[in-house]
Length: 133
Image 1 (tube, helix red, strand yellow):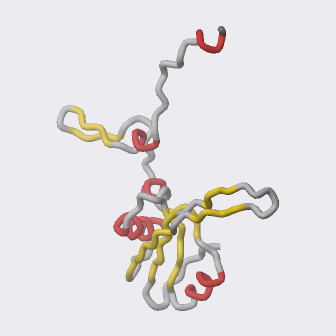
Image 2 (cartoon, helix red, strand yellow):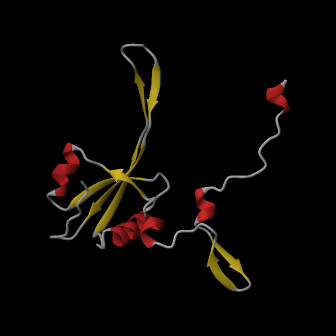
Image 3 (cartoon, rainbow, N blue to C red):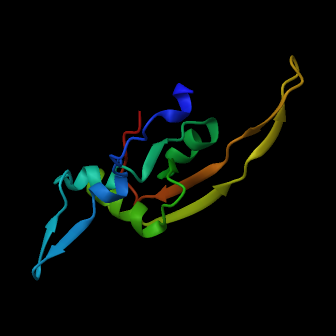
């Protein structure tokens, strides 16, 4: 059969973590091939999107901004990303894990899962703002 007799592609694809890693050669450090030089692009993977809901919009009046963040992001990465991208130092950052939810379609009766995620509340100092729209 032709499907099973094919040769597999031996060329491996590089993962995003391989692109940004630092390579040590002979006592000196240099970035691996394909690594980005911009500090903003290194921190841009932390934020997935701003979370624009009624509750988040109400919080913006008091200086609290809500973002959907990468599942592996921690508080230090979020603080570093805010300071690099928006040139602000947050007063406090809180992270909330969003659980996945089981849903059923009323029309078809099929069951599925609504994916969870992670969101971050970023508290800024009085008078500082972020334009998220």
